[in-house]
Amino acid sequence: MASNDTTSPPHAAFSMEVPLKTSAPPPPEYGSRARTFKKHAVVDTLLRVFLFALAVASVVVMVTSEETKQIPVAPGRVISRTAKFSNSPAYIYFVAALSVAALYSFITGVVSIMAWMKPGGNSANLKFRLVILDSLVLGIVAAALGASSGVGYIGLKGNSHSNWTKICGRYDTYCTHFKISILLSLIASITLLLLVWLSVYVLSKKVARR
Image (cartoon, rainbow, N blue to C red; front, side):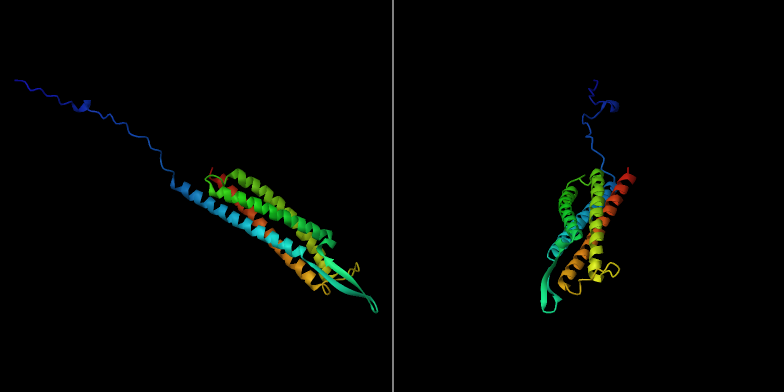
């Protein structure tokens, strides 16, 4: 009696299951690159917060630099004279320039925070725009710093060739205010320069990895 063998030959056996297509995991250097750019974005944000604090403090110190003194002009006669920042066009420009820097740092600081909080936000396009704007604001602040420093030096030392007398021996509080304000603006200029360098560095890294 013949046996009824229903076993399929080995070559006829096949599986009906279709393997799922899985995406390849990103290379290890991709995660390292993302972490590096995020660190740069965090540093950028901190520098902009620091710039905002410096600019606001510089404006406040300069605006409050007002002092009134009694100046003797003749025996038994004195007149009242007030020294304040609005007496000098250079100081007015200084306050305007640092106010622009404060507003700019606040806006770009918010943009920078939003950029590093979302994936892909720290793009080369954003960095390119920031480096242009940072350079522009750096030029404005540096010009204000140079103009106010020149006027401040005349007030501190005078100029015998032009017969300009120094006033800092008389208006001590006023001179202390503009010294501090100019020093803060100098640090603000250095901070802006660091921001420009940081943006250029990040852009160079992005271009080199393409």
